[in-house]
Length: 161
Image (cartoon, helix red, strand yellow):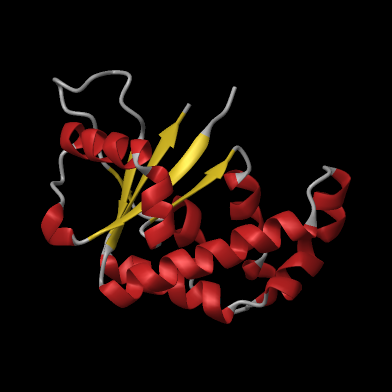
């Protein structure tokens, strides 16, 4: 079974803070994923997003004054709650407002991937997770969040199974 964490950058003025509306918006974005990825407004990670989050959590070991902005790229944002009339099959959704998107982008550009990897390497390698795979996720997220922050966009996140 494939499961994905889907990210979509969008101007705040173009979205509604309503689970049913956002689920339909994200579903349409998911259907147009190739075109949206090509323009840099969408990104997704299959199955391993929790490992990417764990990689970023290593920032706590690197920074004594960490502000926990390492939480933002994967699990950052607030849950958008289902309404009473929502389709129960709609995905879980999170909304990360533009200030959080900017913080995530800043974190991703300032944190040293190599230093993070040193903290997690033994554990990740034992699980069969490769440095190259995580470096690619990191670079993709740097680009995605950098573009979203530059545009002043929010990021909507959905889990698709």
